[in-house]
Image (tube, rainbow, N blue to C red):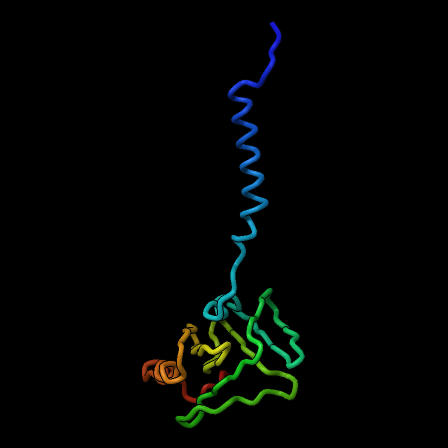
Length: 146
């Protein structure tokens, strides 16, 4: 007698193959690393840098997307915060050396980020960021990494 259809096993194998391929094609890109400012230090570890130029160019030794159009960096000097001045064409620069990052406060997209040697935290106001930054336990001597 001649077979007119597929067996249950054959149908299950086809369904499993279709599900596997669709999972890899449709869902796989969502597993890629999403950028958040608080994970920037971890993405640049152990030795990395990112430089943002006025014309929008980004230079980094790692594959990083940086979503901050007009960053403002506040550097801590002599117990006060001052806007950091970069070179003529640079508007933001951040380095991680041997897993340790620089210290400053970054204003980006109406949020404030405290960059410390071992972490980056997000705040909604400059006052709360400043309070966290000047915490005596982690207070940097001059905000500049040598």
